[in-house]
Length: 177
Image (cartoon, rainbow, N blue to C red):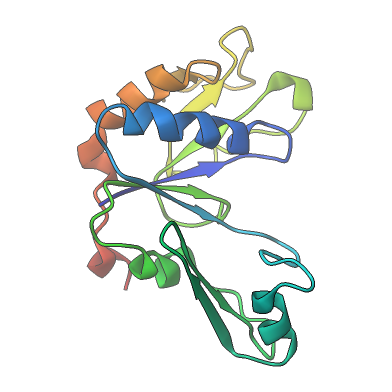
């Protein structure tokens, strides 16, 4: 399993890049999972639906399964932040790539997603886990770097870079204990 994070400020294009990377990696015959960190309440079921009713009734976990999907929702009595390394083992072991959005301060290798138009600071000068920067190629980075610049608007090229550098992203859970 290979794991890569995507870090950047809101509006930089992380979700759109991941959304476009999934089919680019799948076209290469790879199975892709995604993990997303939400900073505020996360709702995946709809009011009135069975899963919502069970959760509202106080169930600790609600697992919903159909021939097409499996969803496990767990509710905590007190807020408990989970590290990305706590959650990766819950994914199917046969997945080829895990694309992680959020957990930007984790020690996962990541691609920083940045746009000059956001006028937000970059992470790469201070984050040794930034392996590359994805940005519109017309944008100028505020600080020089030897890290690769990836075209944010060319997900196939980003997918090719990930596959070509796949050994760097092999996930070893023992390394994060």
